[in-house]
Image 1 (cartoon, one colour):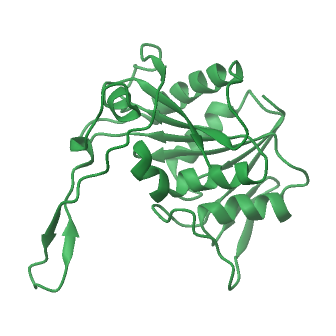
Image 2 (cartoon, rainbow, N blue to C red):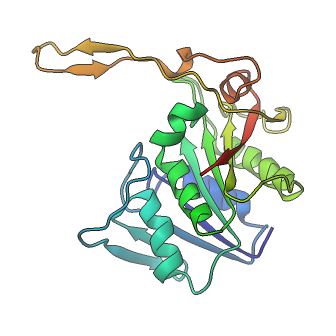
Length: 236
């Protein structure tokens, strides 16, 4: 991989997943730049800011927090904040899966990576599925991401307009060396459409359970829910 990497996310500049991603790339690049939302900006898809100001706060020489969306982070980094184009953009590590084609269009994490590819820069989106009420270890997440980066550095199978969407299994402490890395297709079945009315009768609340979503054999959902790392080549 190249010597300059841009890191971003949708969970925000202070998210533990971004810290874990920094740890995962620490020994792989000469320059590590970070441009991330000042606050959480999850599930905003590929929304960009074209009217109004995008605030920028420089935290150190190579780290910026902005008031825009994840896609804005990539756009502003490439246009104004980095002195030259990065060799790679990595978005993540998202706390929660971004599996299947349905998540693909909802996710801010994926949008930040996709935006890089629009500009001809290789990109990887990394997300970590998690199960509620079970111990989750960011050190394990970082270690799994290191394995993924090593694997992808040896893989040259992407066509123009494609990038990698990576989903890590629940980060149970100590599993980082035992999980398999599987290249797989995105799940085509959608998320559940389950809603319940609010008690006041004025609206509805989504009640679908992520872990209950359909999982076709061999899909990224099935691979990740089975406890392995799902790696999918996806197109803009």
